[in-house]
Length: 453
Image (tube, rainbow, N blue to C red; front, side, top):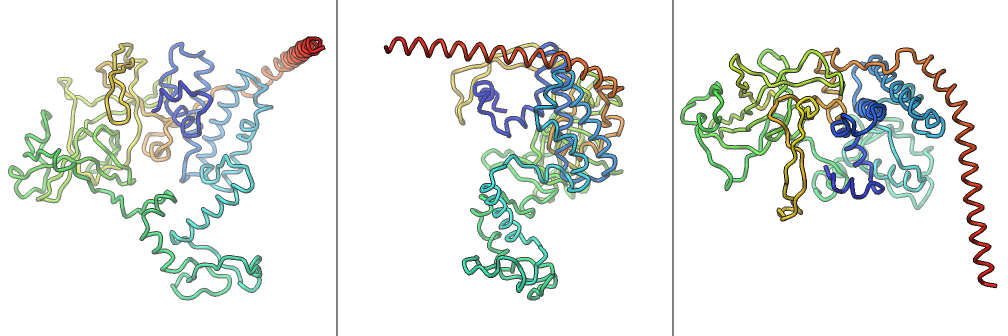
């Protein structure tokens, strides 16, 4: 996170910076950093933002019912902070219509945009059309004799087409670009980078990437596993002689890149999902087998009441030692984000950290918060990545939304009554301030005119 940039240039933030703040701000604003009502507003914004980021909706009725509560929570808190914002801020008003739009058009993230300029919209639409064609997308082809715009002699020729059977197209059939057009994207990496396209064949689930050879130190399993008592992986022909190499990352089933230190959900032999954190990724090249050493964590049955998020605790043996296990890399389901619960663990110790500029450590330092050695973490339910997968794997009791106000009608009547009193007062103050500014400007202008005379 570019915290220095965000603090130094708060008026120059882009969409990506606001996405970062929406996902992690609550972990910095607890216990008096901001008023409790503002903290509740940050929580409601984070919960709603994550749910809106679903790319695929499995249970539409349940999703829309949850979304209705999340939107109500956000608007109810805004009504408490300043009810006038709901009237004057268009984005807050649009949220009311979002449920019906999703029911009709699908996930909101698929048609969201911040571009309203007509020319830019047409240009972006052309780029999306080109991406659809060269990536092998299908579309319904109209009759060429009646299609609009075909009489324009300056129109660019369409790409060669084929139908679902690979034969030349016929009127009113589903078509796509020809093989040569589709292969053009596959054969030009520069075009792929410019279009932001990555071939799904590049990231194969269950595969690993080794560290560079100069960083390798192959060793037997007893040395590679470290101090943890982890049994040797099964299925090895020579378990005591096999050399294990360190890996940079593995590819999960969701095609996430998981590195050491990543939080993951994985499945055991019985198909039960567990949470853990990758410690090491090892590969035995002779046996063509790769495993991940994972520190196991248990998820509490209740949510943290302050952050309203599931809690992770380190799984321990009866003596209190943390448990680790080795799993096949093919069993890793997806990656997720977890944050240390600094509030519960009372992390207040600051230390100096050298500032890295590009790839070089400088002599300049800054204060950073050091975590206490307590293995208590929170599943970040405000995270955008894999938001749908997280909610599909966790129990409903840990993910169901909680209404901020029990009686919304009474709350709205109370806030509207207060607004009828405060509204005229604010408008009168604004008019008086504007009149004072006009008078001050007129006096200054008259003084300048007399000085010129």
